[in-house]
Image 1 (cartoon, rainbow, N blue to C red):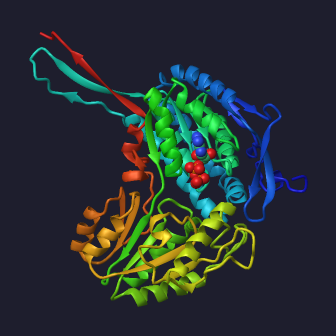
Image 2 (image 1 turned 45 degrees about the vertical axis):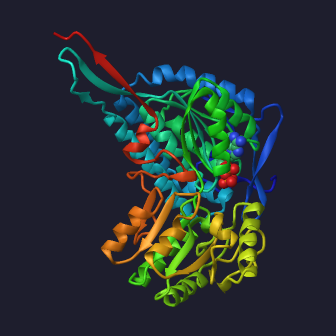
Image 3 (image 1 turned 90 degrees about the horizontal axis):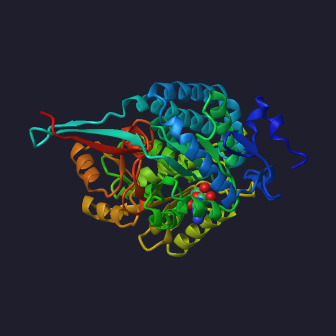
Length: 492
Ligand code: ADP
């Protein structure tokens, strides 16, 4: 740590903020406890941050609660102009923000830049959408009554985010929340808190008043999570992460009947029909499967290929995968960075070993990279079957398993045979198949001839154990607003 200095790598030095942020103040070491942030590319310690707990959480909640009273009274236009400044600052600092992200997450720099643009898009879009939180006028059933609805911010929101998109998962929640008039407490993942604190620093510079955004950082999220769930002042929990943790948060917040938005795990099917354009299917599979080294909740997890196109598609896919460069995210030609940590790497190995022991064949890759550390070769497996672990569990790594199928019924049944329901993908030129299968798939989002579907303007979210609620789009705004119905009587 003494050898390494993040400040040497970035030009706007103040963006390196290894602190928490409560009530407009940056908070350094609390109770002398701290935790370390690692660069997954080489295991170097890049920063040390304060370990915050229940006391800091209570303080953050108090400060957000106090700030709420003023913030909710601002006009949407006033809130918009501050958000716009934040948006501008994020884009002005894209280089430094990307460097910080690649340092703590490991993803290739080009992917970090793409994420900063994506992250900023939520700030831009919701800054405007905050002006359009319209209510309704409803024709009454009695002559002397008048009925209208208005929308109001839910209150103080707790936003808990993962490491795989260290910036975008934050802005996707913070932007609609504060555009709606809510105040927030952010708890970023323990692996990637520096991207979060850099964003919060820019929010402060943009003029977000004290208490409106608070940031809690810790290696142990449990005391913070418990207080956020128990505290009556928190009105809403928005979480992106594993289904396991999502269930804990839903249970714990039931005592105070909080609103929840949950964006949880996925087990995405990607279905390639005989008539698909192979080049398009391969290009989009690569984008869906290998982005962020396969560590996204919408990554294709099970690839179903119809028997007539199986060989052509698998060979074309393996050829492209073979040409990927594995390496440090700061190297120009790097396509696949390291996995986030050792447990991530071990999961990929476990899925691979299980599949191979049950008859799957390695078409390309199939082992840890010669670079060592947390690098894994991008892999394609054929002859994959339903009884293998990777059919049930999300691999979260650069491993593409190819299943063979005969007809629509068979593939729809296989695709839906999971507790998850986040994203699914279909490749076909046949409009009937596209419609029919889109309607049958029990998933919140379906990409048709597209492996990428996230955008700020469309509702992102899942069904079944993949979650509750939607993010992005007008639906994403509603997650942070209550509807109030006003009934006027005796109007003569
Ligand atoms: P992953 O398996 O991808 O790391 P997690 O669901 O464990 O996903 O973590 C996502 C986010 O949830 C992180 O910010 C993490 O610190 C937080 N988290 C994990 N466990 C809890 C908990 N019990 N209470 C609150 N937050 C938690």
